[in-house]
Length: 396
Image: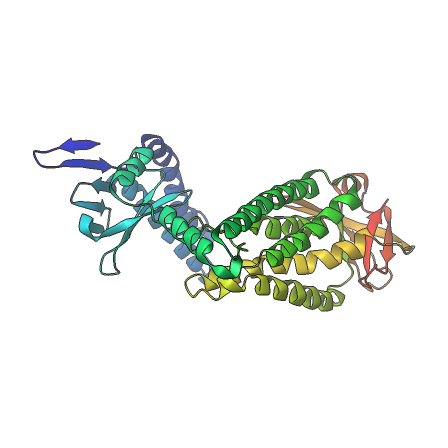
């Protein structure tokens, strides 16, 4: 809330009312749970495991107590002379003359000082009048993300390695942005197709296999104009969704649909595809890898793009495009169980079969799980794999 004085208007903002109510209602029961739960298990005596678990629970309880008090106490205070944060345990202040500007992401506004001599201050979206805080800052300080994007755009237009004239370079940048927009939109569509309704099945997997190499080709074609990662403060278009979302969806599809006899035969394919795909991605992204300010962010994001695809691509091709006839085993069911979390996985415990010399669990669909009881038998279809990676399926 703003407080006026003769020389200054003070804007003081705590946690927004809705968030305060939510925290005041739900956090106290959590505090009681974490502080009291160890005592419920102590009736049979204390041991090293219970002491360690109690330490973790009590630490969490104290953390929530601190969070509750912080919600009540913490305030961001904005004046024409400074921006100040007053919390439960600490206080930070930046004079107006020491504020370089601010940056934004989807959850926070960051007040950036001119040097490390001053602290940085972060304002969360759960603050009172968060939009008003951003408007207040926009009137007085530069948005450093916008400023950097504008500077990068000017650097692109002046970079003669990207074209002979400024109009030619601007045209190339526009084309790169349009291409990224198309490929990223396709990537989200393909990922949703793979995850939620992969029909026709082979077409969905072909799309998931094809889109990352297409994104790589775009990165190489527009080398130096397209980022493999994503930054709010960059004028360069990004292909991160096209490089990451289809491989991730393909990986999940593999885990849902295919069960390998062993992982060892996959490793050479992971090394080959990961080395080739990762090497070409690094080559196409070399302009950004060379930048010492963002190097490790780019390298980390490339790693997250390469690893899912290096595993998912050979497994998907090996299993989904199998042409050999399977070897079928009739196997008794010894038991069944399931594990639940964000998803539920169903298992049948079956007897020895084929290359498996001892009883083991196999993953099945919910339908097969519900239709099968201990003492029944199921068919296990063992395939050699299109790429020589043995795998199997289970049917009634």
